[in-house]
Structures are given as structure tokens and as C-alpha cells.
Length: 540
Image 1 (cartoon, rainbow, N blue to C red):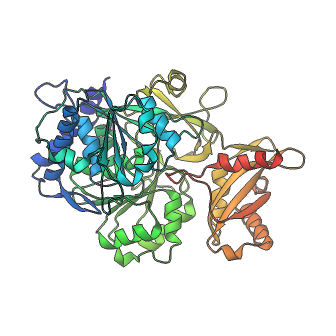
Image 2: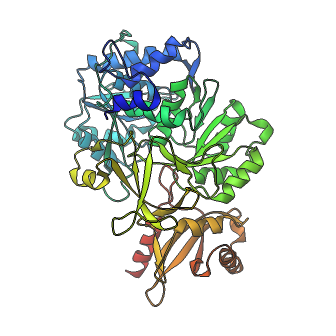
Image 3: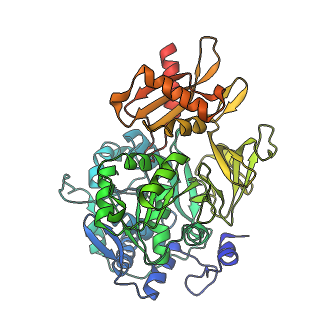
């Protein structure tokens, strides 16, 4: 079944744009939906510069698409977006899609080498970049032969003499807001999202127009429960698959208002936003929830309007979920999504929540766990997760080997290890590369980390496999304390005994090292491979 047919069959939605049922363009669809609903004057986005209504957003999107076509950029050619979270982000993304041009949003925390690879790999014709990020591109622009245009999104104070580059506001200000919509279909390429590249070069996951609507119709509205009256904020940025749904696809699909923050999120900064705006829907990652709870400046329950909180990125420790619910009277619904599947396909939800698990499959998706022999495992046994659903990426761009390994027919291989319990809830055991065998038995680092994090002195923990004197693998823990001054040999013993009381004794960490911080990706995921590499470095 094609994506267009899935949209109609699974959601009851009309996949029609224009006069022919074969056409579908997500940008045109979602903008038309809000204008037809009379929301032209309703705030769509609030950023550091002010408010942008749905009518203004539609105008900006049309102008940006027209400007790209005026520059000679054709359908299916790529535009790389390195933008902070301002209204220019959805303007550029949707403007590309409406014109039939491929949007390639990228992580704003990468290196020159990363950006050079992405520009050359995507063969982008244009770069749209925030002024504050431009210095990381300045030296490599001339090294990208396909790159013809650079557009700079400026904010105050200006730090760049951009005489030789086009300015975002000038570009859209000089164009008529024509109502051109490229005659795309639901299965047409719409955008790429590059994976983190933790196991090699980043891979460009190719997604289609129809998948955006399906994430909203299968998860955003029926499961997450977004409504027109909601005010949304996502700690995860728009360039992540998680943030893209949270702060664009889902709120725009119901006519909600989204608060954007161009700065790197901190507990203090987000606390200020929660106090300033009546945010009802809040999306974050486990490490941020933990840091927020430990922040003295965190708002009180009476100071916020939260009604729903969602977590993804890594498994949410049970202790953090309970403490958050106790403080704010709002549960955190933990879920799993991947760049390849576009958004959350496994989740806890109202009426079906079990702390310490990642929940059950979102309706419309299927999950199977596969053992080392390639066969499905029984409930209670560890297996690698495969998912099947209508929002899977088409492929990794120009990477046939990885595409064939990951996208196996209708199933997408995740690389995550899980257990399904007797009630049908899925328990995260970590990435396949993170699993360790102790005395011949698999041990999940998440399980040990959750036990450590349940101690009142622990802020967060990471567990990896480490060789003992007999060259046998044992768990080693790296722990960040809420109060670094409490670090001591005595506390090491206390934490080890604490884990033994929570888990089977062989799982306790033989070594505990206190750190002020843990290595993480920009999404807040702990980079255990960097901790494992420390052993190799020490022994070399």
C-alpha cells in the first residue's frame, strides 16, 4: 500500500492537494488546514523576536519557496539548513517542501568536517544558516562545488558582514507570496535527516511528504493528545526527528502555538520559559528532566500550566518519572522513536503506563524482537528490536550497504536491545553495542544505571563493560552526583550495596568513578562508546 493510500486508510484523512487525488504536499496541506479553520490571526510561533501568526507563516513560506525558485533551484535539489530554533526554521523547511525542494536540516552543534561532509554528500545547491553558526561554514563554502547560494538568517546583535551573502529577510521580502505548490505526491522525497554518525559517517535518512502527516495522525493527535488550545515547547531542537514532530508537525497539524528557544537549553532557561508562557505540552529527554528536577530555580507546580510531558531519546529512569509526577502532578510518558522511523512508535500513554518500560507500540506500528539466530525471541528474553510502520525512511542517501542492512523489506532494524514483558510492555536494555556479558549472562547498562539513579545522591550514571585483572568483563559505573562534594570511597560502597539490593548481585558495578559530567550527544544521549574508549586508551 502506498503512503497516500495509508493516509486515507489508516487515519481517514484526505491525501488530496489540488484537484487530483494523486497529489500530496505536506506544507501546502498543513498551511491550508489552518487558514481554512480561521486561524490566520492565531499565533503559530513565539520566538525570541516576537510572534508569528498562521497567516504570516503561510505568507513567509510561500515567499521563501518563490525565492528558492527565483534562484534557479529546481525540484528535488537540496537545501542544507543549519538554523537555530526561530520562526525562520519552519519558514525555510516548509518553503522547501511547498516548492518541491528537498530540505536537509542539520544539527547545529557539529564541526566543520561534519558540515563539509553533509554539504558534499547532499550536493546541496543552497545553504541557509543562522548568523551565529556561519563561522563554522565560512572556510568550507569554497570547497563545496555544488553549493551556489548562501542565505544568512540574522538576529540582533549582528556579528557578520554579510555583503557577499543573501539575507533571509531580504530574500523573502523581495518576493511575491505566490501560491505555487509543487505537484508532489505522498511518496515524493521531502526531506533528509542525518543520523548522529556515532558508528561512522552520518547517514542521510530520506523521508517522504506523506510520513509527516502520518506521524501526526498516528501519534501526535491520538496518543500524545495535542489540541488546538495547547502551547507547546520542545527541549529537543527542530533539526532532530523528535523535535521536528514536537515543535512543527504536531502543533501545526492541530493549530496549536509553539514556543521556540534559539539558545542551547539549560534548566534555568527552560524554567524561565515555563514561567513566562502558559506551556501545556512539554517534550524533553531523560537527562534534561533529571537536571531540571535538581535545579534550585525550577518553578513550583503553581507557576506552570503543564498538562502533558513526554520523554524520548533514551529510556527514562523510573525514579525520575516518579519524582516529576510528585512535584508537578503530571506524568511523563516515555517513548521510543528513531531518525529512521521519524518519530515515536513505541510509548507509554494515558491509561497504559508502566514506569521503567518504554510502553507498547503506537497503533499503526508493529514490533518484533529478534535473537542472535535471527529468530523471534520469547517474552522475557532479550532481542534486537525491528519495527514496521508507514513512516519508515526510504533509504540512506548514497549508502546502499547500510540501507540494505537497516531497511529489510517492511521491517526497520533499530540496533536497540529490548525485552517484552508478560503484559506486553517493552523494556529497554540499551544499544546492541552497549550490552555486556557478565559471567556469560547479558547485563543491560540501563538496568544498572536506573538502579544507581534511584539513590538520592545520584543525578545521573553511565555503565559500560570493563576488563578486570583476569580480562573478564564487569560493569563499571561513571556517576554524576547532585552534590559533587559528597564523592568519597565510602559513598562508592554505599552505591554498590544499593545496586545489590535492587538487582541480582552479579550486576553491581565493580568500579564507580565520580564525574562532573558525562559525554553526550546533542540530543542528550550518553555516549558510552567514549567511556569504553577510555579503557583502550589507558591500556595502550
